[in-house]
Length: 267
Image (tube, rainbow, N blue to C red; front, side):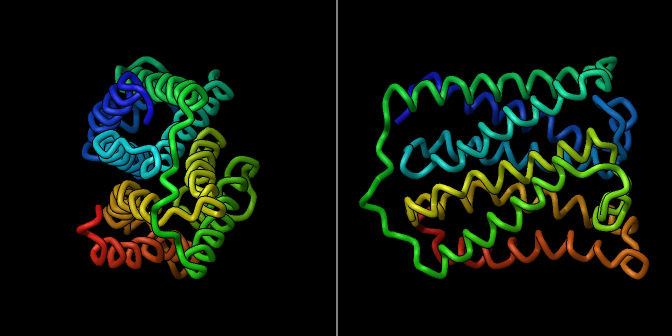
């Protein structure tokens, strides 16, 4: 497995994301006006949902700490930190660092990037095993992974290249107009989710995929919860694309819930 330093940094990420995400998630109306860039309360709560999900993922992965099981969850965490920091750099002229919450976001991402760099060095140095003795995912599960990569990955790429006024950017799916800063942040989040499961196309490690689903479930739960809190912002008659926002999370979250319930003794 990776070094104890890498594990400690992963736990540190869990703590930082828990504190920061909790603030954004539970008091979004107060923190939206002073966040690191221009966002609404719903966007703030959603970003808080990402961070609470990251906290859960980092914690359960650091607790398990078997590379063959947690590698894809860690890959997501590393990608998220690096890519979101890249977005901050690209839009650095739009950053508002006048409030401590903005500095907390910056500090959390920098610790995440440090965690990624130390983890990558550990991986190159130690080359930990992927646990070839694990049961292999079925053909149907492989198809599900492929569909997930294609769908979520396409959302990520679209979010990273779309310009204001493109389809879905003016309240067509997400009920509020996003700045390019926010759109890119959402895009790299989805892109990280998609890239993290690509290794299952060849490793086919069922136990690792099960852990990944369990570790990622906080993301689904908190982001969906935020959408229900701000359900009144969605006008499904005028913008039926908003149904896709709910369908994407519920369509993944409900089946995965029953899978986790079935294999709960293995988690």
